[in-house]
Length: 289
Image (cartoon, rainbow, N blue to C red):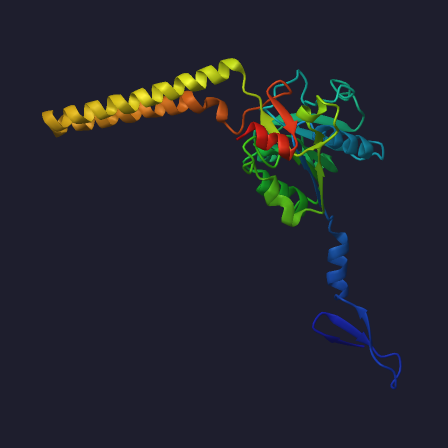
């Protein structure tokens, strides 16, 4: 037997061809077998697609085998009294007392590794992360959980917002994921005519008061621009000293108008079925012309 690089060759007899017996040295093979290898599975889809339901279903399945499971939700999700939210009425407030399963809510995933955390990750085999689009440290933390701590991790969340822009970091995990499940809802608009069409986008419902406020903010924005132009004319006459003041005042007003006008456009706004609805491509394009 002789070794070339990391491959062992064995010669059964003088006239026979060599055959590979090991891809690694015995020490390397022992080190590899002793390491706990983690896994990463992603669940994504539009609003009301059943992401949280699917996550909870998988987690409960692992508790049945005796695995220690922790469900992690973001602190921004305050839609229910409990530590998790779901549109599924079968699961609402009914899975909190499952054996081998613990629930927690955090603002950052890295806080789970703090000494003062209410849980210890080493105590759990499976980690389920819901509303993952809200975590700014999702990619780094999940990679650490899987590849350094050897945890089995399931991540659930939105991939895009109601404007179809990338939302959060769940798509950044795709290159290292073991599997990706994309769920679809049923188009709310098509369902009114009893059609069953898959919904792949989330649409924000604009209420009457919201529309009126947006129109008023647009008018205020235009008025600020007019006032600023008038002030600029006056400054040119009076001198440069007032120009600085107008510039400061103008920017302050501009910031306020921008905040007032786009407060509801925030990507991180947590919504429910009365604020968002799932739509198919045709309905989404119709309502967002």
